[in-house]
Amino acid sequence: MSLPTMLSPMAEADMDEAASWHERQPAGLDVDLVSEVRNALIHVGDQPDAYPELRPGVRRVQVRRFSYGIFYRVQADQVEVIGIFHNRRSPRVWQRRARGG
Image (cartoon, rainbow, N blue to C red; front, side, top):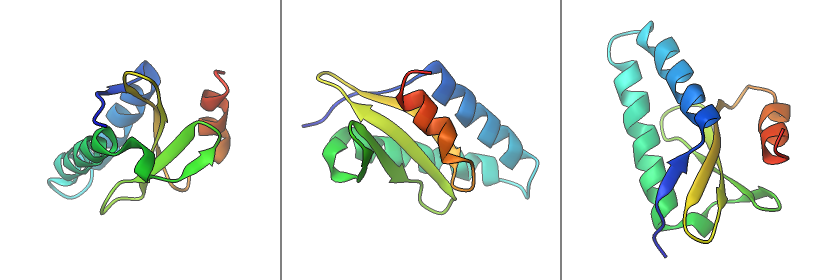
């Protein structure tokens, strides 16, 4: 089952923030991060149930080469990304988003 992957506005802001931070690091890291996130999103769309469920309805895929996780929900017609977070960030942030807050 292949589904389109849609980023919530908050997930888009997370991605922009992460790319911006990596842009200030050694050359090319921001481009590499965005590329790896896109690859992970393609895999999620192709196999949305393949990644671990952290709580009912919320799954996470790890971004290859980077310490970021993509948190998402599988819906009937799409995959909704609720956040893209560094692994050291407090889990309370994605948990609050998962509750709708």
